[in-house]
Image 1 (spheres, helix red, strand yellow):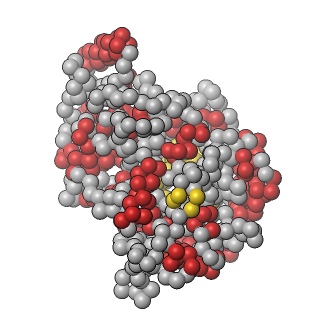
Image 2 (spheres, one colour):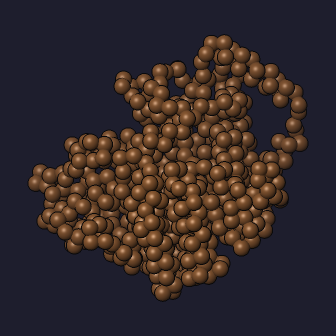
Image 3 (cartoon, helix red, strand yellow):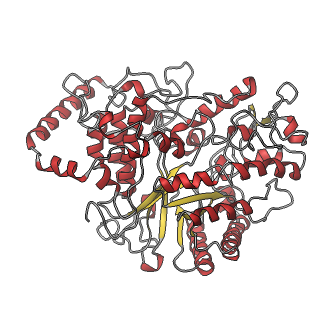
Length: 592
């Protein structure tokens, strides 16, 4: 495949998370409600709240926190807390009318036309809009869900039409919850798909939602812009596989029958894309379908402890293998790429060293005590932004998986976040600061712009000072999910850059050479000529030297029983909650 252009038109999108389906980590102030909110006495707002009307609006007023007291619930963790999801938030109001009035400010002001203009200027081709299954009004009498958001979606589609951006809807919830995470609408005590996949009624209600939303798109003449449809978001690994397959087949037929045979359809990978490499949907009749995976580096402590180079190295190895693990017509030989379903990395981020769930917990406690979210005015150093630029580029290259040919593109998660605690998840902030640069044209691969993943790793500074691991694993009583162990020499050796003394060597270039903080989206990019030059000057001697060196490193640490994964800092003691992927434990770290 040509390194610069091809017949493939890459999908490069941004997730509009936390808007039509609210998520607490994206908008903590929306969930930090008081008794003034719940009774309807005052629809007040916090300073800097992004869901608030302009301060010049007659509807804007700040909360009097001496008079209005925090509304706390008994959360699933057993602690007193602000509402944790849309279910408990909606439940908290004295009536649905009061809740709908409060929610309407968020739906009105969270996304603006100026955001769509910024996405267009960044070269974004698609946006993905998470929405609840009840958005068209299918709500039971005993359910607290609140409607009133479809008209805002219609307005948003109009803005995207004006600026040539395609919209994909993503039904992110399911009756009973398909995974138990807060972004399914209802946080459960344990992660599970049982309440959805074991209930024929709930599965049927999900199909009804697919039908209603697809029909609504066509009835409101949105089909020229809304070209993609997500049928089931992150179904958990314990879902009944037969139920998921039957549901997916039926949902696919519903979407295509209503919206047309050219409509793109995507589905969640049940957290393991390789499980679907069974000739599932590989026929040409399932072209424009996608197996959707979500990759992050923040949930396991071993990941957060990595050095900057190691994060890139992990992308080049494990994440690259995961991306190319599906989908083929001749599995397990994996030589013939599917003519139907392809790969899509529907969520990824620039975050790398902070566990969101615990950071969010501290943020909400700070609101309760001090009236302000934790680190609300946080800034990022130039050195850290330099790494973020490399980390973003390497992920774009990896998730496009150009040489395997199995992937169609990706969506960054997410458009924006409130305050400073989660800036690395904020696309608009990253673009404004230059560590997310203007994207290549959709006909050109990311690799042709930025170089290979390994090339990016070599150019990455391994400055340990930019890593601010949270929570501190040395903190007394810390019980952290470790995540999987690393056994890849490329990761352990900091992308092959550790010298004989265990010190990382200088990168091939400096941050300033290909990251212009002042220039923002005009930052210099690594060109194709860099790749050619590296190839032409290759010599076998460094390779043999590195092989002998890595062998020596392995022998030394095997003898001493220590891991070098976190080699850029002192070793610390872990409370091991399971090195393998324990899904019950993972709820505590994946759920915000």
